[in-house]
Image (cartoon, rainbow, N blue to C red; front, side):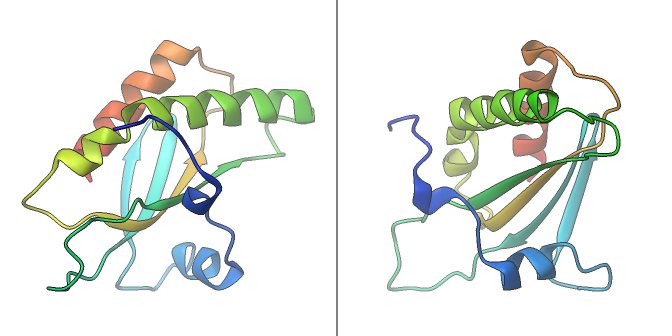
Length: 128
């Protein structure tokens, strides 16, 4: 499997994004592991669709804690790279359905190094 992150794997639908961040939704599941809070939907399993589709994802970094766009973009790049390298963990799970949409919200107040972000990303993907 290629470790790429295509445009089709980026979440851009305002309707889906709104439902991911809806507090009272019973379809939304969440995982918390510092420095991320993750919300996601599970895919519907169907008999004719045997090939799993890659989940769509988005990354959110607060402007409140990172005033400069350079810092927010650095955190997003590190998160995107950690996800890209480790998304195969999701596809290896045969017993549980894949997430359809994932929102990674960076809640840390300082910029973490890539090793910490990647370690956290691996743990999150195993929990999903």
